[in-house]
Length: 88
Image (cartoon, rainbow, N blue to C red; front, side, top):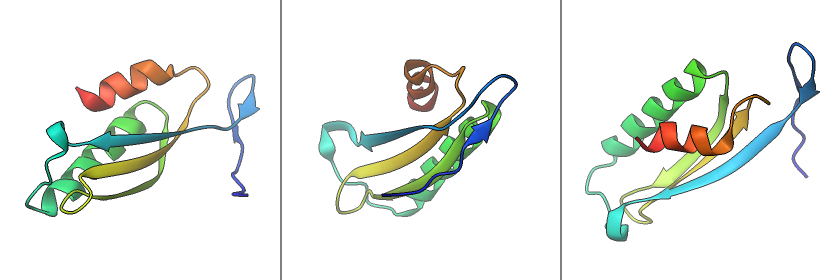
């Protein structure tokens, strides 16, 4: 079992972690590994902007055509809205 730290907000304490898996369109592998780092940096910036923490990001776009993200959300952030912000 993974132990996570609780985050405190103005009237609450908690930890909301979501695991998101993104795959490439039509599951085609990406030829360059640099694209993966750019995507992770972009998602990290989006998370910082909206009081979320990108706890872990792993992927292999060259072989496995997917990126796994573990994101710790603030309690007032909607999961659907966060995914929309990342994918747009």
